[in-house]
Length: 170
Picture 1 (cartoon, rainbow, N blue to C red):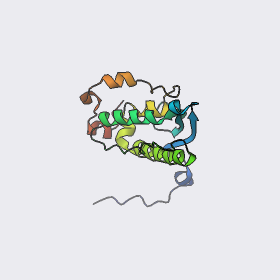
Picture 2 (spheres, one colour):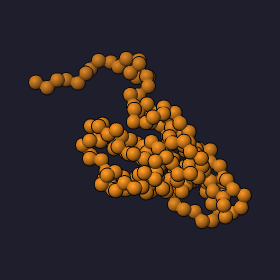
Picture 3 (cartoon, rainbow, N blue to C red):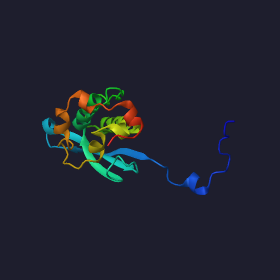
Picture 4 (cartoon, rainbow, N blue to C red):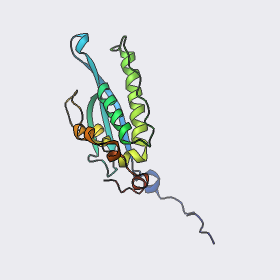
């Protein structure tokens, strides 16, 4: 005989308490740096809140520029060959420092990160995700451990799907 699902009512704490595992990410506060068009760039704050044990910090704020996102995506793609990594918002060559363009890019970067951090295999198995969204660093400097990760072969960075699903990734 098959057991019936639990038919008791949920408690107040179960309904309104904090979720078991959560990861919230927001891209905001774009800032344009530089004084001449040749050396100007825009950076964005990444605000992260989580209680997932794979992440070292419960709350963090880091600042990244678009080229950091490109670098992160390239490494993530090599590291996670079985996961389709979403595209970044496209490069803009005209009016790239206008408020509309910056806001459109911010929205695209946020969508990108929300998809990436929402993927269970990347949450638990990526060697670069935590460093990118929580690593400390100066704007324009690549995120921590990037040099070491670049030296790894693709085979060394891939995680067997069963291992990641069981949460055995460290």
